[in-house]
Image (tube, rainbow, N blue to C red; front, side, top):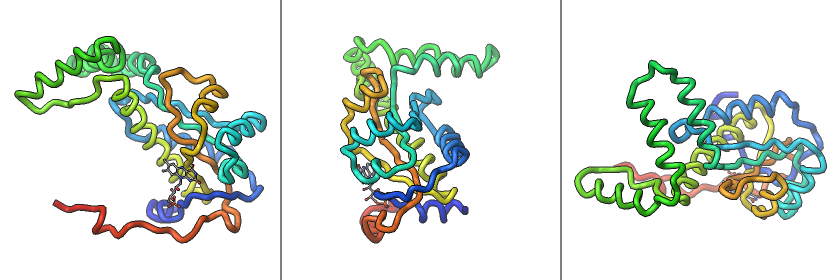
Length: 227
Ligand SMILES: Cc1cc2nc3c(=O)[nH]c(=O)nc-3n(C[C@H](O)[C@H](O)[C@H](O)COP(=O)(O)O)c2cc1C
């Protein structure tokens, strides 16, 4: 399917048919998710493809058993977890190799631990950014745990959208959900306390009545400002 057709075909579906979703469809879409742009290539997303029936039931229950989860053939949980930063730091350094540019190596060896770790230094980081900001433009965030979590969530949301469009491009449907009990989902998946469940995406074939209504968007003049 052409890119714009896939974008237009994607709708949030609340009721699916019993048709199974082939593994290849899921795998292609998961591969597409991993190609999303992400902050400093730290890939702090973790994606849980819930294929096993009992766990799927538990996750659907944690999604308040809403139709989009209950009738789904597949459920995928998109998690942002900044505590995974070290794995990607080491992998990036290994990928770059010893002959990479010195500033790039320093970026991963010094800046990444400064941002992702040393959380007790949050006030110091805030001070450093804000003093530097008096004389020149600086990136004001991230200095707190909350900021770094936001960084991870942004990248994970982009991976989620790649995933949904890739499913749409293959003729299947999705519904992104934030209507879930995060504490229960984290318990089921044994996630770290720093992890955020960004979205749970259900997958299947749309059933008659699976659409809540006609697509509606605010007029573009209201939301797009050309300056
Ligand atoms: C972050 C996020 C959370 C959402 N949570 C839910 C949800 O819990 N349940 C649901 O039925 N739809 C959910 N939706 C789907 C939206 O309601 C839907 O995208 C919106 O109404 C626009 O419709 P469309 O996706 O068909 O274009 C969510 C969408 C996003 C992006």
